[in-house]
Image 1: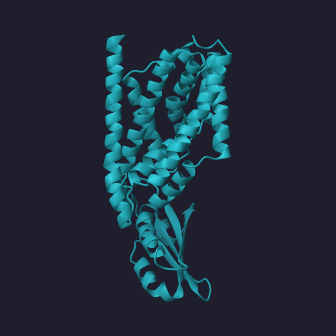
Image 2 (image 1 turned 90 degrees about the horizontal axis):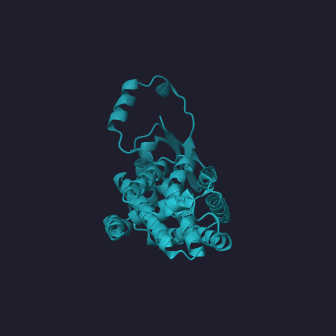
Image 3 (image 1 turned 90 degrees about the vertical axis):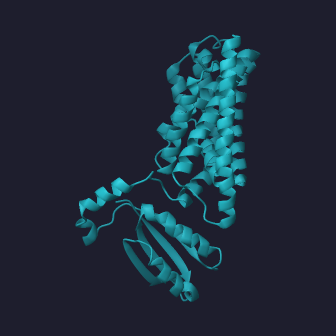
Length: 335
């Protein structure tokens, strides 16, 4: 059983009404204590699936009550007579009724906010992965290119774009787009410099494969985006899934930069088209997964904004993909 602990600090003059309301939510255990002369502390042990409903209520209270604070903690182990003798049929019933499992919107939002920001760690990892990937292209070494994709933190900002577009958080969306473009710009600058100063590496399989695009590449991007979104929803380690996203973004970006550095703009166009196809496919899959998972804001103005942004963003991305498919197919006919 996945459990989490919610700690709520409530001013004394609001305690009775809020305490009564909190006890109405389904919970495993409930404790109250006096935190100070002015505040009471309530600890609620709940199933992970019940966390978001409680946090939504507490979020609304926090907007109107001064001195009201909420903390959320993961629970590794919880033992009681009830858990030790729990009927296995209840677990079977839960598994049958389970929808797409995910962490609460509030936990995911905190993670997205971190992913949408440019940091020194992000910059250095992008820089190093760009150098390693470009050297892998020059040496025609698949192992080196794979190593670059392992350290490239490209999944975070892309997932943040999809998540913020579903919620209609345009401020965070803007930050996420800037962070993604910033990462791709670093990769391009490094690969352009290598392509300009080194003639070798532009006739290798590692390079040439990333300057061609087909409709099949869309399925790679969709699979990468869906895997990344599911891993993010369940707060799983993003390392392995991040490699899939990096497969779709890092090598074609390097190929584009090397082509520009070599003044081979025909191959640069092919790599640019591949990058664009992959990015849009990842975004479409991630945005769809987030929408299906039931992520919704609770405040009226945010709900109204999200109801417009969610279908608009998915439709916009889908239209861009259809245009790219047409460009790919027309390009084949002309060639």
